[in-house]
Image: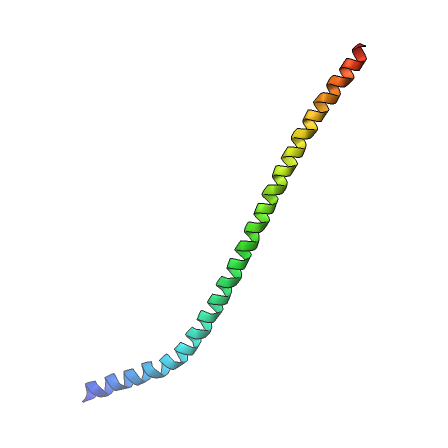
Length: 84
């Protein structure tokens, strides 16, 4: 009988705390889901920014190469004009 009363008291305590814990757990789960959604949006935005930066870098490298080619051609033209 003592053993049954102890088990019953333990089950009641677990049941009562389980209700409060379930509500807290649901709130926590909701907050985690919101945080994950925010993190996913941030990651997507960061990936888009990285892609844009890579595009800008490629354009800048192309412009630098074009500038170097143009500088070389101008230098050759100047040298040719000086020798005439």
